[in-house]
Image (cartoon, rainbow, N blue to C red; front, side, top):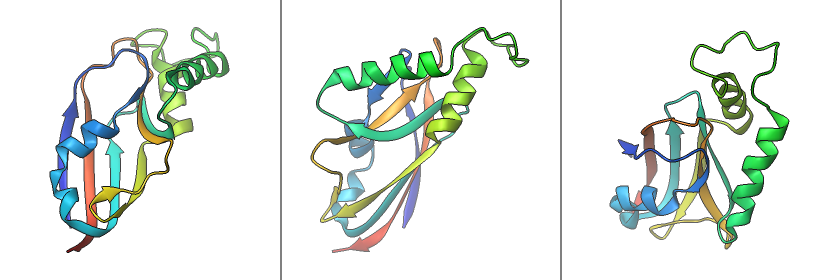
Length: 140
């Protein structure tokens, strides 16, 4: 079992595949025969999810859906200290979640054929994002 923290560079607002970034930051995965990886984002205005990794229009549609479902500048928002995207970012983050868990099999993430890990950036200027990665498993 081990844990590490990594910092991702700033991404523009939207949904971004980060599977390779995670795998590249955790070369120890190669030594795990069976286990799990847990990835937690230490922010309240960005989130993580798993979805389609091949067609980029899926990520564009995610962004369009969430912007329509959770619009900016609603008159009932009280929390708006950091701009019009602030409260919607918190809501989107809660809807999608702050962590994911994936099985590890024979040194690799055991994702489905079309699955990838998304960083969901809900702010216009979110900045760098910190992730805590915990790996539990058997070596060999």
